[in-house]
Image (cartoon, rainbow, N blue to C red; front, side, top):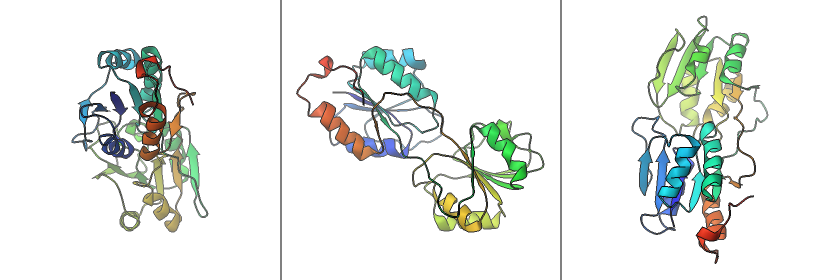
Length: 261
């Protein structure tokens, strides 16, 4: 039994913590993209770096005799989920996706959905002048031409140009607190927030703080994901799925077809 977890998220680390108690020693590998300096490493074996597309991932699955592939990447990782689906099908390896639920607006929220970072940037001049930008350091070029606006950009690692001319960088890593987000919005006089619909609790307090401050939030919608893949919402559910479909199944792994939902 060899489980490969495509990770880099809070859910992936928690999943690895659970799986090391379930699968045999040395049978768990977590893969990180390597885009964040000094990542929090999960237990078990860890590899860092890309696979070289779907074909490279399929070859890795075969070479390392992977029995189960779990996609626990970020909701905005995008390409890797499609590569995982194609690679799992090519290598005849069961695939499970762990996808945290997206955020849902509540009473008092002033949300403005956007289909992309470029669309989000186009909305900003009509919504505010002091922007709390929480979409990460990738894709800042979409906001680079908004010279009349001021940006507070928060990310784990320092950004690279191009980025907005009037920008202050806050290097920080979640989880964040509601009190902290309230103070940040107050201190920097933020009047509009931009975020991706990442879901989860670690970065959700900014939404509550924006609601309390009665300021608009531009929410970038998630990219499409592969269809026909079984999906669970969290690490505990992933382990339950693994037990039900793989670990406790009497059928040998090599004989199992690609599982569907």
